[in-house]
Image: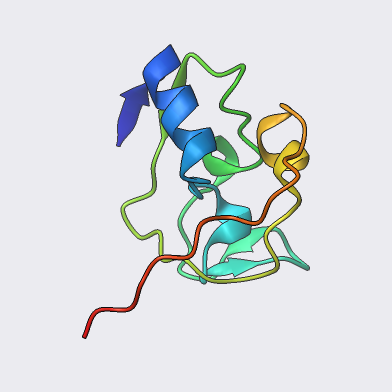
Length: 91
């Protein structure tokens, strides 16, 4: 699914630490750089939201996989001095 990137999406992606690329997907095989489900993933790899006019979201994306890189590596916008907000668990 292709989505146009505007300033609002960039700001919300930064605020909510949006993960959308193969490197954050449970189906990503890091040693080979391939999708374990066999999908072509060139357009989903290492996409930098601050430069991209659009993003292609994979219909099979499932959050998981490796460690999340530092914020500056995801967005290129520097780091923060605080931890991400803790969301309360549903009861």
